Image (cartoon, rainbow, N blue to C red):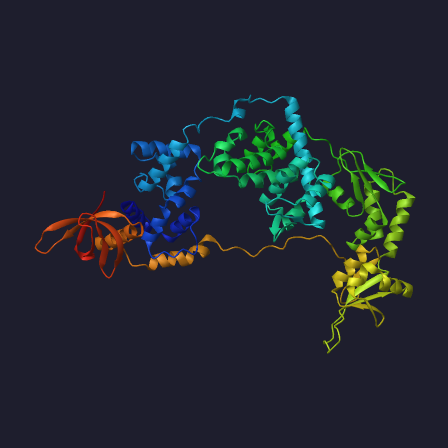
Length: 585
């Protein structure tokens, strides 16, 4: 191995900083590695475990090309060299390093049946009109379902359990209120995470600012943006492969790949990019063919098969709204801020209540803005019962006012009061004092109302949950709209590869050069000592004679190497300066 380590170390010394950082990134080298020089780096790169991870990044065709070259002892073809050079698997002549050839040969021996195609790949490559229509319908349903999932997540973040999926309670909630197909929930969440609509914060998934903007897009815009972002995250081995039936065998040296391939195929099926048989859809192919354009052809192909969206509803005297078809996403999103959706299918039903109207006012709506919006989308006008409900609920808003106070210095035995609750109805203050659900707030009479040690927002939402018509006041005493929606804060930017590997690259650049044969010999013997190898050492004796010693090396230091002489069965110590050659049997 030492000759290959030496060759690779010399190769590393020829790379500039950018090339070296790219290599370390591609091979996922540890940022905290304690490498003394390029020899240590090369030794790590040719280690069996490190090589196994590198080979897992290669596609089947690349591995088969390597196996052929390893078997024949020849250089690999020029067309695959850039990928292999980027992973430090071949030398400047395109020949595999010895440890790489051994790993590839072992893979080829264990993969004798690996070229057998998936059983599904034998299916017909043609789809019926019914299959195409079903795939388009699934795409439409998934776009709406993902929007529902984000809306639900805004109100209550999804909990990630140990297995990496959502908890049972969240799954049940989404199956009932959001995704029509429970089997698609995991695929849709994975799509949202992969396209940065959701992000993991601690143990919870939260909607990102990008996800909040995505919810306001029309249906086809939603589909196109997620499809493009998702495809950009695909491994290169399947990004150019349109047949999802072959994805499972794309990375045969990666033991984790089959499960990942199945998950990616589930996402592609859920989003209508491939049919249930794994065949790429027409609109997906058109979208990939137009990566930087407006995707007009893809929109037209998919849009022709989607149900027509509506922009009007029937407002009824029973305080419900009925959409006679799929409601446009922007209208649905706003309507659901003031009404609760009770059913969702081709026609959806929404119900207005005092609580939903109060929540809309809390979020910044007014009686006038709600009437104007509802009148603009209603075929039947705004019925009198609904108008009365809006007037009543909006009028009650602010009967209970919550404002933050400057907390006085804490006195011995006293407490710092931070929030003031006021109202124009003294009897309501008495009700708040005896309300058991508000006991955790520690309400106590204060100047002009009730005071609490809790923060203003905590007091406010406690009152809202207890169904009191509360309003939050800002520092100037004006009503301040509050939103319960939880949007993920943009995370701190991660270190770039150049920043992360800067200390390691600096250490390698500052290491003493290993240009002399004596330096290489010392490093070669260090490797042999760690491996407890048995070597034949050629030693120059006084008088010009050379003698060979076959030894199991046990230590090196102080300019001497120690080991057990296999022939004489005794311990020997030899000066490094006298060793002229090393042979491995």
